[in-house]
Structures are given as structure tokens and as C-alpha cells.
Amino acid sequence: MKLHNTLTKQLDEFTPQHGNKVTLYTCGPTVYDYLHVGNWTAYIYWDTLVRTLKTSGYEVERVMNITDVGHLVNDDIDEGEDKLEKGARRENKTAWQVAEFYANDFLDGMQKLNLLSPDHITKATDFIDEQLALVRTLKDKGYTYQISDGIYFDTAKFPRYADFANLDLEAQKAGARVEYNTEKKNVGDFALWKFTPEGQVRDMQWETPQDLLDTPEDEKMGFPGWHLECSAMAMSILGPTIDIHTGGIDHIPVHHTNEIAQSEAASGQRFANYWLHCNHLKIDGGKVSKSLGNGYTLQDLADRGFGPMDLRMFVLQGHYENEGNFTFENLEAAKNRLRNWRNYAALRHQIHDTLRDDSQKGTDDISTAFYTAQQSISAALADNLDTPTALSVIDETFSFLNNRSLDDVHKTAFDQLLNLIDDILGLQLIVSTPDISDDSKRAIIERERAREARDWQKSDELRDELLEQGIVVRDTSHGSIWQYA
Ligand code: AMP
Ligand code: ZN
Image 1 (cartoon, rainbow, N blue to C red):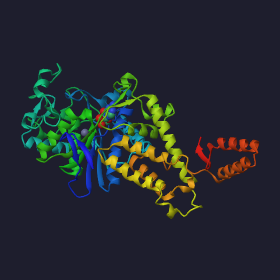
Image 2: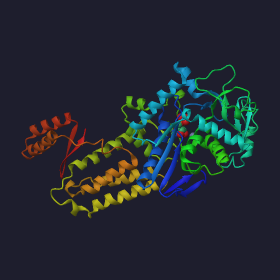
Image 3: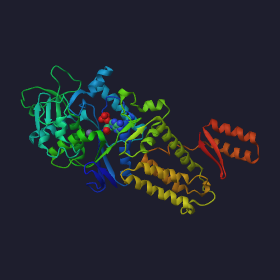
């Protein structure tokens, strides 16, 4: 399997550290609001990565965090309000209530989108001790310093700091924003632990252990920095070096750069061997944002008649490294493609093995096409998660079923193909295409007989009856085929 690795800036052959076991960490959402289609795009791609690894025979242990504290509005300069506290003010609730509500909504959305549940879903607020322990290790090794608003990481002590994101620190310093905290020693230094500002009480705050303070007699409440959370959760569960770390491209210059610095400074080992980043989804070519009124949620899509699988199909149509363009026309196109695929999947209920033994149908062109397609789909995904190519292979393969007698189709090969598509792309083709009732099947046969007897009135009546049951009958040169209306 080949993956584009942000660390090496090239396409690398993927080799896990330990045999066929893969450890994977995904930066999870900050739960201060509903997720928008852009956020979901990232999680759909990483779910596809996990599915691809699993279908390739790897055993995956995956951690995804939920950021419920410490992600500041201006996270690049450690300034601004905590997004959770901001959400709490907006909704007149506590930060704890806001976090619980949106974390549950996220889990619910994951189920709707058929995203596999990670082995560990960890909340930052449940890992405060581990985060403080990491600050302690860094302090003991001389990487930290304290200023008036918190304990910071001294990036000058980590010479590789700029490498991961090819940062130009000099230019950054020159162009530093006016609000840049001048107490910091270097422009890239970032907060590991922030103190609750004097005179303020936060919903979420913890006592800063005395041994972490320059003057231990001080009593300071504080909270973890966003970057620290991911390092502490990843390393405490998966060990100092993980195989794959995923996130959005927005994470490269600050969040992941800082995760690497603090994790590697603490452990002395490489934090992650493969770093994967998905590009951003744009809407009509512009940014996705609540304030622009285009931060569509799953509920917004449902209100417009689009299901979670329509979004999933839309996302898979693009490559994770390319910028996506969301428009409702594009979503409609994905929905149509999915509807088409569902009707192909429904053909499995109409393949009968009456004329020829199924085992004798394993070597004809169509069976061969189904088997080859399985290999081509897996190969496309193993080639740096090339979902658009996998989707084209599926289109092409399904089209073999056009103008065919279903009696020629090898049921086992077709079932296997559908199972693979569902396993690897998570589109739920099989569960979304149930068989029709025996009554409907009888009506289809009766209608065929009526047509043979040229009883057009009866045939039309039966067609209407079937339509009421959500079934459309198509007459082909090989007999009638039903589809979902
Ligand atoms: P956040 O809750 O802001 O931490 O974001 C959750 C995830 O969504 C992160 O992995 C971001 O990189 C990702 N993300 C945010 N906006 C977009 C977007 N427009 N397209 C794709 N991913 C995004
Ligand atoms: Zn993270």
C-alpha cells in the first residue's frame, strides 16, 4: 500500500512497525458546535483509510480524541477564548453541557455516516493527568518555560521544529501579528498549559501541580493546550511511536508541528511514521464557515432531502489530497450515482440460478469482470486511497449488467463484489437494497402474464399497484426487471 506522507513529502510504501498491526491516531473534532460538511469530509476519508487497511488484512488499533477543552479561537497564537467556553456563553450552558451535547451529536453523526467506531474515543478532559505528566517530562528535560499566562514549549530547543511544515520562522517573526505575545521567547513557542486569567473562573479548569510552577507556592488554576491533548492521548494509549497520524491540512503548520515537537522532545523517538492530511472542502469555491451561513450540517442536508450516504458518495468522488467543491448540484449528482448503484445492487435479488448451475457460470466474461473489479478496487485504494478511480471501476463493472440476461450472471461473484464495495467504501449498498415482498413479486409475474396475453388494462393496473409499493418495473428484451421507485 502506498500513502502520501507529509513527513517525507513523497509517496511512501506503507510498512507498519509490528507485522500486520497498525496503530492510528485521528485528530477528532472540537465539540462546541455541530460538525459541518467540511469536518465530515475529513472523517469520511479517514474511515475509508481504516476500511482499506482492514480489507488489506491489517489489524488496526485506532484512537480518536474529542477536544472538549483548550482549543482557543486563535489557536495559532494561543490567544482568544476557549471555543467550549464561547459555546457555553452562546447557549447559556456550562462548557461541560455543551461538550456533552455536541460530542453525542458527533457520535450520532458517525453512526449515520456508517463511520467505523475507533477502538478508543477519548475526551481531553479525561486525560488531564496524562497531559500534566507530559508537561512534567518536558519540564524535567528543560524544554519549558513559564510566562504570565502559562507554561510554554521552547521551540528553539527543538532544532527540527520548522522541518515538518517547511516553516519560515524568520518570515513568521517579521510578519507576526500585533497581538503576538511578546513574553514568548520565540515566535513558534506554544502553550502546553494555560493559566486561568486572573479574576476569571472557567467551567473547565484544574489545579496546576506545584512542581510544574516556577514558584510552587503560587496557586494557579489552568487548562491544557489543544496540541498537548493529542500527544498525551496518542502516546498514553498507542505508545511513543504510532504508525499513522491523520488530520486536515490546516493542522500541518501549527497543531501537528507542535504535536511532533512536544512528543519527540519528551520521548526521544519519532512520534508518527506516516502523516496523512486531507485537503479542504470548499463551498462554491470559498471557505466553509458557520458565519458565512454555509456550514451545512447533516440535519441541513436531510432537510433538503439528502441522506448521509449521499454525502459519503459525494466525498468519495474526490481524492483526499484534492480540494473538494461542495455545491448542491454536485451533491445531487452523487445522490443520482448512488441511486443508480442501489438499483444495480437490487439485481442480486433477481438473479436466479434456474437455467444453469451457478458454479458453471464462474468463468464467463461477466464473472471475470466481477472478480477483476474486486482486485482493481482494492488496488486503487491501496494506491494512496484513490477513491475516484475505485468509483469509476465500479461504474464500469455495473454497466456490464446492462442489456444482459440475469440468468447469465454469476450470483456468487456479484455478491462478493457488493460485499467488498460495502466493506471498503461503507456505502451500505446491501442494507439499503432489501428484497421486495412475495406479493410484489407475484404482481410482477402476473403483470408479465397480462402483457403476454395483451391485456394492457390489467398490466397497467398492476404497474400502478407496484408503483404504490415503491417499485418500478422495466421491460427489457430479457424480461422484466424491478427497481426502487
Ligand atoms: P475542528 O473541530 O475544527 O478541530 O475540525 C475537525 C476536523 O475537520 C479537523 O480534522 C479539520 O482539519 C477538519 N476540517 C475543518 N474544516 C474542513 C474543511 N473545510 N474540509 C475538510 N476538513 C475540514
Ligand atoms: Zn490533534
